[in-house]
Image (cartoon, rainbow over all chains, first blue to last red; front, top):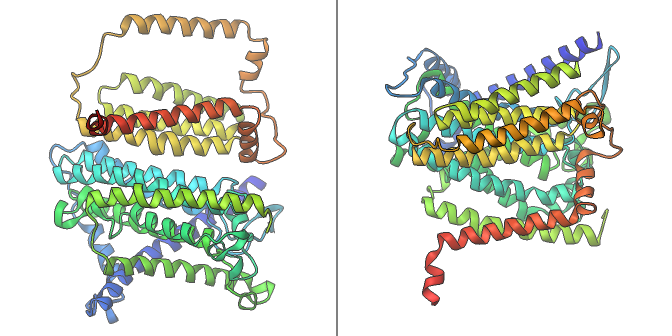
Length: 353
Length: 172
């Protein structure tokens, strides 16, 4: 009986989170084009629905009804596996993100946390592990298409993901040292009380602002966004690893890219900007409405990061491949390592400050 | 329940491990290896070692195997370019390992056999998984840990020197 209740609760929670993520993706596809339009002094999509707000529906229907083409000479099994291998890791990471207060509710004798699907004590490593699995979808998609552009896109992406994954991992070590935990719930709870307790602004003793900058640059590179979108550089490689994909398989890659953007924004919010905590205690309101204000602040911070992604895309030109590699290994990596050394010295000299 | 889960993971590990060497295409071999890594991680989770499970996926599946795939794709190996000259040594090593396994099963009541059997309850740790591994690495196993890091450093320097041949020749 208890197992049944737990299963039902968890499944409904997963359903709610998945629907929220996919709706956000749909909204993002429109918002990205709108924001890019405004920044380039255009209107953006205006045709479908009032002010173009039904554009995602039209895009979705188009992709759904489009013919699914498998190129001649492609490896059919791998070709169909790759989009799934790309999408699943992007969605599975949301399982450990706390998007509201750390409450425990008693439902029919089962302890249930309404605002995090599961609080495992290696949460952040879990996200990193599945983020690194996402590379398989891209590599296999590029390889199985039997196309030069796809293969080159896949190879570039493999090199890029491996290089920048390392920087993502090293840049968050400072936060993990200060919070002495790998659980995202514990890390969020340690940043309660006001913005000066957030790790970005020096909560825990040593500001992680530099680490955050390394993290966000590496995150942009890991999600294959401009200015690091070499795997799909359209002026060089047509569309990179998904050149040969169409219809729903293409949509899967697309969903994976936007899902990864949201996931990375969530991780940045939780690790550096206090998760669901408001910048001032009084903005959080009384204890009973913490879940409303919590989800509001969480969504607000995540949206700011998503806007940053669009802003970067509108502002910066694409890097050259050797510049990308040099920047990752010779600039970001030493900065991340220096941050770890400094943070551990501070954490050792002033424990618990 | 625990035994069923163990046998599921064990069976998949054995089958995929065999597939890694049996499959013709190197890319399929790598994928079989990926499935195997996930099931090894699952085995770690059933032993309450979730830190090891996640590290297993992060390091082996996420970094090392991606590099393998990278190399396989870059070289684009043909099916014929494979080595078939290891049959004798393979048979020899296989017999050795098999004999060891048989010996272990026969002498099942020894301490090693007992600790390997799946029915033995994993010891519940007082502190978290991550903390206990960290403490062990930096106290009991400090020396092997440092040796391993030194070997990795040597390998890194070696790799840099191999790719930068010009550096040494220019000075001499």
